[in-house]
Amino acid sequence: MKRNLKVSIIINCFNGEQYLYFAVQSIFSQTYSNWEIIFWNNKSTDKSVEIIKSFKNEKIKIYNSSKFMKLYNARNEAIKKSTGDIICFLDCDDYWDKYKLEHQVRVFDNADASLVYTNFINVIGDVKKSKGIKVRKPSGYIPKLIFKRYLVTLSSLAVRRSVFDMYQFNENYNIIGDFDFVVNTSNNFNIQYLHQPLTYYRRHEGNYSKKNINEEVKELKIWLYEHSMYYTSYELQPISEKINYLELLILKQEKNLFKLLKFIFFNFNIKNLIKIIINR
Image 1 (cartoon, rainbow, N blue to C red):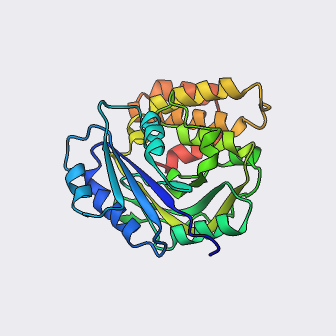
Image 2 (image 1 turned 120 degrees about the horizontal axis):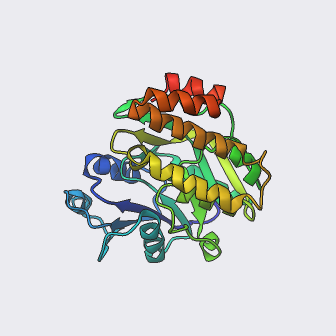
Image 3 (image 1 turned 60 degrees about the horizontal axis):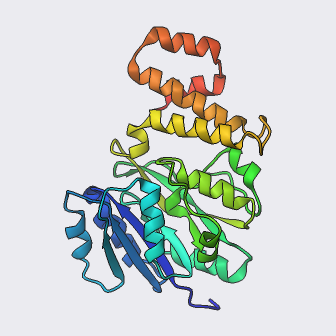
């Protein structure tokens, strides 16, 4: 590697004790060693702070929020405390392959990249359910391509500090803030994709987005409205389809057959119908 770029790893935590130790241990297992952890304790009431303190390492900097903050507000505040050239994010329930930082820093060294994201493996509870996404994802200046199938997990993303001089997370969002950030930055910055599955994305019943689907629908509808002047309806179609799928999912979970059939009749989408039958 040409330069010893420092990486700041942001961990925003609210009651994340269940998987936190495993997440942090995956950082200490990295083959790349020039990093710091910015641990933002968002008023946790469980043993999360005890767990992070148990590592007893000067690379870990703990900040206790004076009040509970919305997720992307907390992330912006944590970034302000960081000192790295590169900013990464690791959610408490996710974890990394040991080569993740090494490979990403190498891309920053050798390419005109401002953001680097990796392939990821789905983990259901404690069981790996995939070998990573098979189809290669796009690189470059790619806002319109991102819409087709958004597959950037925040825990896979590394961002140059200079990007945050122009953009922050939109604090009005509580679920889709990372999607909004990646789409907006992709208009002006080169994004590179690593096909190696270097991130493990854990899905479980405690996932905030899984428990708050109505909120995600509301945020996506606001986002769609605000961006309709910048993109065509054809380009935004995948977002509309996702909203359609989530609304189907809500009706399925409510077990209201009449409303579900009525929605399918007026908003028929064969892909989403198949997904709702097989999925979740």
